Image (cartoon, rainbow, N blue to C red; front, side, top):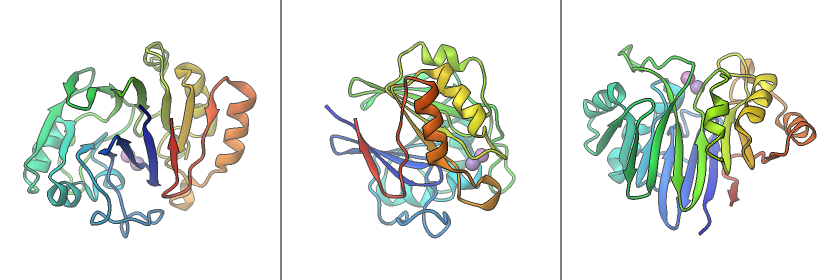
Length: 228
Ligand code: NI
Ligand code: MN
C-alpha cells in the first residue's frame, strides 16, 4: 500500500491513504501566499495540528467544519477549536500516541511557540509521528533541531518533513543535522520561501543532504506529490 504526500505550500501537506485524506497544518489560499488551493478545495478526513501559530491554523476551522474531519491537536488547541465551531476533535499531547482508524498517531516534542491567533494559550508545540499503512512518517512541526531526534529516528522513519527556512525554525545547517539524527529514507523540506525572512535554496540544501547522508531529499513545489 502506498502513501501519496502532497505539498500545499509553506508547511501544509495532505497524505492520501487509499482515499482517506490527512491534512497537516491547514494554511491555504488566500491566507498562504504559496498555496493554490483553498479550504473549500481539498478533501480532509483527519487534520493534524502541530501548533497554534496562524501560518499553521488559519484554515483549520473552515476545513474541519466543511469536511467534518477529525482534528487531532494538543489539549489546549483542541479546546480552542471547540470554541470555533469544530465539533469533531481528539485531544492528545506530547509523547502520547493513540490508535486511530488510520494508524498510530503520536505527538512528539518541538522547540517552538504555540500561541493562538487571538492571543489564547496554545499549549506546547509539537510534531507528529505516524504509523500508517506500514509506513512511518514524521512531521517535526516548526522546531529548532534537538538531539532527541536521534531517539525519534531509532523508530525507523520512511519519510520526514522538516522546516529549513531559518529565522522562525531550524535553517539549512540545523535541518541537515536533523536529517543525520533522524536518518529517514526520504526527507521533504518545508517552511521556506513563503516570506523574505525564510528565503532558502531548497535544491542547494537537497544537494547537501545527498552528499552527506544516505537520505533521499525530495523538493516539492505547491500541489506536487510524492508517492512512497
Ligand atoms: Ni510556528
Ligand atoms: Mn510556522
